[in-house]
Length: 369
Image (cartoon, rainbow, N blue to C red; front, side, top):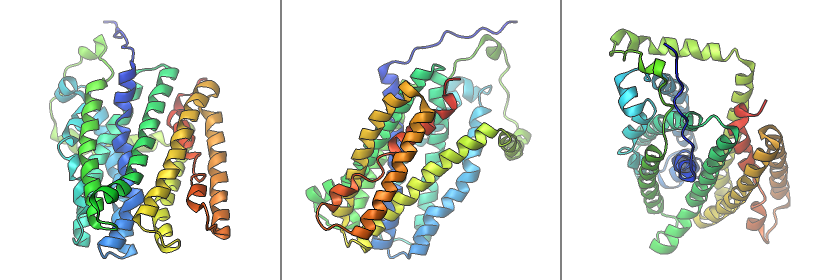
C-alpha cells in the first residue's frame, strides 16, 4: 500500500500568534525567574546566596534528564491510543493547564529552603512538560521556510513582550497596591503570571495542530501499554541522544543555543543584584532599568524578523552576536565611568542584540540550502 501525504493546512495569522503566545510561558517564566527569583530569595526569604543558587541550579541538573525524557516519550506516543486521540504533543500541554498557577507558590515568603526547592522543581517539571512538546509544533505545522520564520518572529515578539511585562509589573503593582520593596509585590506578580500561563497554553491547544497521519501510518496498529517498553525508555533515550551527538551540525547548533541562553540567564540573574548592592537601587529602579532593556530587545526583534527573511538566519545571527558583544563592552565602560546622570537611559543600550541573537538561533537548522 502506498503512503499518501495528507493535504497541508496553511497557517493563518491567528495560528502564528496562537503558537507564538506559548512563549509568554516559555520566556515569561524565565524572565521572572532569572530577573527576580535570586533577588527575592536573598532579600525577602532570609536565604543565603549559596542557598538561592542551589535552588536555581539543582533543577537545571534534573532538566538534563527530564528534557530528553519528555521529548522521547512524546515522540513515541504517535502510534498509541493517546497519540491518536489526544495528540502526542497536546497531551502534555493539557496536563499543565490546571497546574501552572502553582507558580505563585514559589513567591510565598517566610518558608524553608526545602519548601522553595520543592516548589521550584515542581514548576520546572511543568515548564519542561510544556516547552518540549510546544517547540516541536511549529515544525509540524509547516515545512515552508518563510512560514517558519514568521512562527519564530511571532514567538520572539511574544517573548519580549512577556519579558517587558515581567520587568515592569513590580513597578505597576507597587504604584497601585503599595507595598514598596515588599514580598507581597512578587506574590501578586507570580499569581498574575500563573493564571496568564494557563491562558496561553489554552490558546496554543486551540490554534495549533500536529503533523497529520499518512495512510500508511493510519494502517499501523496502535501499540498497547507495555511495562517492559516503559522500563527501557531511559536506555533507548540516551542511546538515541548520544547517536545524535555524532552529527556535527547538531553539536554546533547545540553549542550556539546553550551559549546564547546561558549567557543571558547569567546576565539577567546578576543584574538585579548588581543594581541593589552596587548602585543601591530599590525594586522600582531595578524594574525600570530592566524594562528599558527589554523594550530595546523588542525593537531589535522586529528588525531581526525582516533581516532573517531577507538575508537568512546565519548572517542575521552574526550581526546580532556583534551587537551583543558591543553591548557588553558598553556595560563595562558604564561600570568604570559610573555616570550619575541618565544612567538608566544608558542602560537601554545594553543587550539590544539578544533579540536577533535568539531569533537567528531559533531557525538556523531550517536555513535555505
